[in-house]
Length: 243
Figure 1 (spheres, rainbow, N blue to C red):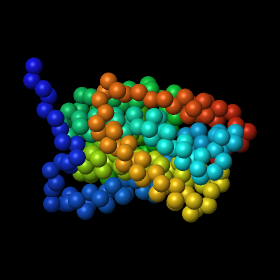
Figure 2 (tube, rainbow, N blue to C red):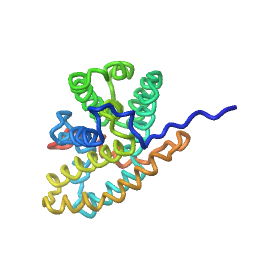
Figure 3 (tube, one colour):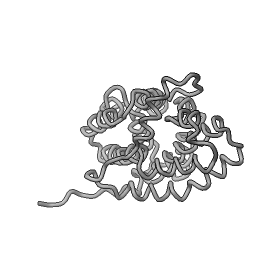
Figure 4 (cartoon, rainbow, N blue to C red):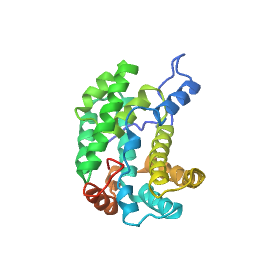
């Protein structure tokens, strides 16, 4: 039985004159910018619970938590699904998009985390339809509600961002959001937060390489700590974040 052709995920779609490597980089910067109106800043993904229970008390404990999430948590699996969504978009095959989108919805452990992904995905989809109308067919193929990771992959393809760069941007944006949450909650100084982000760079690169090599039979996570923190979050006496 002939093997399926392998797509080179480290290259972007054939660029047009308006889509040079420079413009792709600028598009990535826009996609991961805190100014992107998707509401990422309002979520802590359980960190608020962990800070209030004194499980996260300083930059060192927050860094350890984020490293474990990159290695074993849901963000790695989300990113692996993004590769499959990007691959389907690259092959002009909309059929798998709905399946992967439903799969991501089903694997979320708590209502808060699922609602976070749906709300951010809905915001990004709405924005992308305005800024990049040619993405409409792929977005509609995903069905409603669209998860954020799925919409992010479609945006990266539409803006001619190569797959590896997409993953680096997504993981770094995720880490930035949670470090900023830690800066506000623990609290940490701004310099400590920036140092923590720098310390995470090597782990983000290693995780990206692992995701690109990951096979579907290896999909799995170990994030029960996040699930418990998320489930307890809705009963906190006071909350700054939505998750």
